[in-house]
Length: 201
Image 1 (tube, helix red, strand yellow):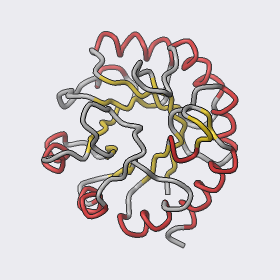
Image 2 (tube, one colour):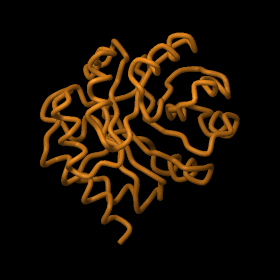
Image 3 (cartoon, one colour):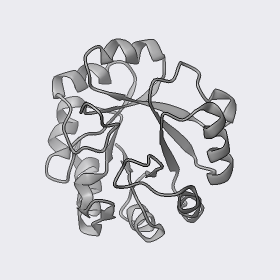
């Protein structure tokens, strides 16, 4: 089970997430997020990690994204917004789309034709990171369409049962392993990774 810890805001928290066993660590450049970091801080985090780093962006143009990728050098880019299929493909950095679980999401996932994608809860006006959960039946159907990375309201107490129900390719957590918004809790991260890895035996 692939595990991503997202929304890190400091190099120390990123390294703690890595040490806790995360397969990837994400940082968020969306200004409206309580976990927002500057591009300079994101570059510091990416450089410090040995596991893959994931740049999370919302409603960026391809030109803006290209500049950020050049500056930060992430391993992956996670796109939130209404980008067309193939957006950012020229960057040379792998890209996957995040979809919110709003009406019609399964059709949008199929239309995007991506092997790997993220599904997060739908909260009007929010791009993600709300701590709300995705309907598990919907998530299970999404998992049949490709490599599903399931986000939304996961924590150390519910991640194992969720994995057994949905059978995603991977899971993503932000607020579920925090002591306060943007501040990661080491024990919670360790517990989350352990629970996720042990879920399927």
